[in-house]
Length: 411
Image (tube, rainbow, N blue to C red; front, side, top):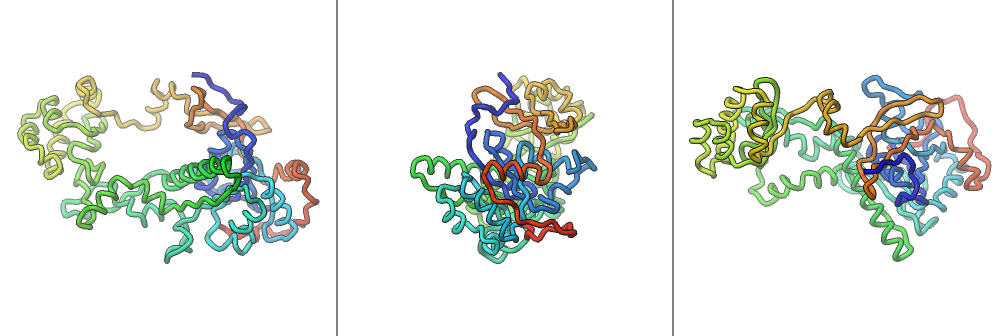
């Protein structure tokens, strides 16, 4: 495995991307394109910029912006422009005329009012790939609802797939602990953009790519949702203990051991019972049909059995026998493990002032090479003048005011 911090000879080298998006879904797409070699120019409002600059998590900042912002916008350049100013909009249109990809996540109707909707942008540059993220698509009663990860997890039914049910079938929904819908939507947008660029290579024409958080959330649930679509239409039940899948038979779940927790995946229940030496479980699991039908009772008995020994004891017994099981690690345990070190999954990014912070690297490997990039996220507008000279733009007509707010509509 060879590693390189230098983005030379990467597949998207020479591709120019304009990233108008904010927060996570759109910027995560642009980040992945940058990781693969694209020149990503982040177009931001002059005052405040991307709202994610102020979205501080765990009280962590870096070079005046949130550490989160640097994680999702590293390796990009920043061009400040007030899209409501005719002069500034004209400058941005020059960028569009010479770009390969344009990404935004404004709410439906905003780009139409600004004058940068797909039809007008493609008229300016017929080769551009116009990529848009919305919360719920361009039509329908949810069109204007705020598109936010937790809200979409809730509306899409995803939150009802996690968490134990009570004996009466009730119990609260449990959302994922990460912004998984934003991330998967950004990945879907990357796929669409790359497909459109491949088509452009054949036909010479650009096109439009649209994704929404809701559609990506439904696609993420394709396995259980397909089963639901072909069922009697009732909500699938969660198990009352050790729950991990609405359609998974016992033993699928996470179990408490004497000193921690252990995950057990798809495993024949009768064989598992024999391996751990539980005669009660052997008797209960004799009927294969019971593995789903009576999964609550089987899980309850297995949980009782596994409490008798430490996780290491069970893993030493079950893993050599081919049982799919694993320790349930906290992050301090994970980062101390040799398996984590072997991945080389973290990297250091550096500011022009020499400050450093740790974050994750691009998870894609090319030609056996991990992709690292030390460049941090740009300061707001830091590259405006350099980009203006590069594109031969006319002088800016924007006159700074005393207001700290931007007139650009929020997505």
